[in-house]
Length: 170
Ligand code: ADP
Image (cartoon, helix red, strand yellow):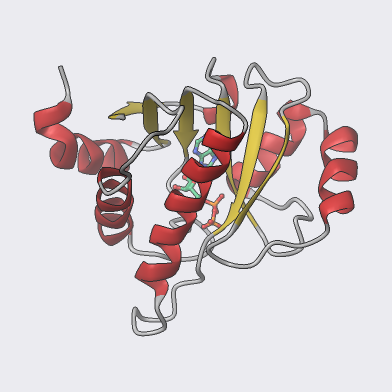
């Protein structure tokens, strides 16, 4: 599995699956969650999420992408940052792992991730980027996922990813 980065709006990407930084109630919210709900079609996505009902931190669920270019949305719930000693890193790593597992279950070959937990949930972006890259590098075994894309919404995050992925960028 190749790990790439790009800067931009995840809702516009022509990939098989995009990952949403959701909340436990799958209720929609601000940030990337709000952008994904609006772009996918708020009513349809809200209904699909309500039918699933709940997702624990570190876990993920999948819905269709509705009006998005992406066929699937993988909703994962990141940890709320509480200083770093509440297993935040393990929970965040689990978000990336579980998302790749679900992407494999639906047969996605390309998956785009936002910087989970680094907005309202307050995870320090540098530490979150390190967890993201390390969790994705540890994906082993057969998977349908050929490309995972770490999507940065700002230059700071983009530079973090570029620095960490330096050797893997072409
Ligand atoms: P969380 O609640 O998990 O912290 P947020 O949505 O508040 O989630 O933020 C997660 C990250 O998503 C932040 O780095 C934010 O800048 C980024 N983000 C917000 N909107 C978009 C978007 N449309 N595309 C990609 N990333 C986005």
